[in-house]
Length: 162
Image 1: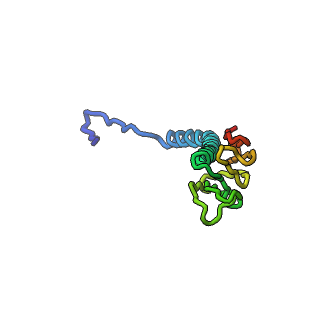
Image 2: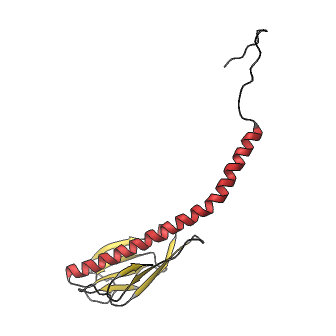
């Protein structure tokens, strides 16, 4: 808008933000982020832990189902030290260790999720869907305030998330 003073008209002031108003607005936004970010990090840590626990639960249920369907042993073996994921494979020699010639059914890698877990080295399901032993897996987020999740496998092969 062009302002001209012809003598008869008064000059109108242009409306806008002052520097003080801008600084106050930026301060309010900064305080909001400072308060909200830790809660968001905790939420993301909890989601990551739950997501990976669900991945393991699904893999264990899949292994159990394949053992019953194929009438053979199927194992879930942890990979890496510290554990970075797991493999589901046909355990033809029943040693709970994946060797050459044993078919890998599923590979899961969780290195990008900032989650660590204390694994049982291997769980094997027989043709009846029973596990060779009860096992517990504890998932922990790298975020300090996130809640741990435990995945339990009973000797009968039932998988539960605590």
